[in-house]
Length: 203
Image (cartoon, rainbow, N blue to C red; front, side, top):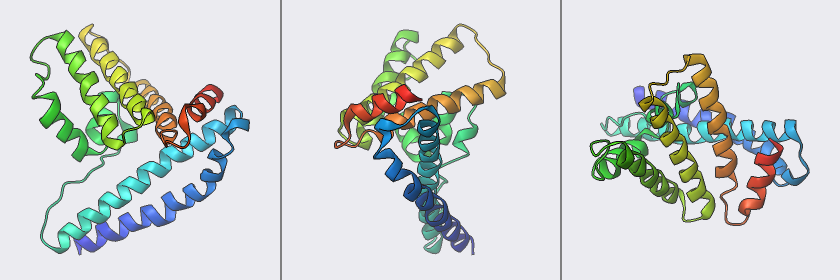
């Protein structure tokens, strides 16, 4: 019963939300050169919702199928858009990948045990490789480095004793993630950085 519930919920996220949004925004992405402020935000926010429900839907279906054969697979998403900061986002988004990057790259590289400088370097290296994991294109690499810069900035902010009001932190995190999705969506080799410049510039 639990497996059926997960599978049906995942399929619903994919078919009734992600695919519906994709059909609406994909033609708009093809014509992004002529878009202004509002239209650019609409399509990138649409993509922000689409990519979550698409990927979370597939993940829920996998968890459901696991239950059919007795496998207790962990959930892959934990309300990532509620994250209070960018580090919290990566604890909630694509948990299987972020956990793997932490356990098999960040910690073996020294993690945060070798001082602040090497902690920041390790974060950049891990996110660079995380970007490449999605595809060997410059768009994905830039997206990974972008998140590396965000994580480094957050780490420095914390080292300096900085604290942020949680609602403000959530809002800023969401906005920075949305800009990251504009880069990610443009990472298709056929689209290039022209689309990224147009989207981010108009946003």
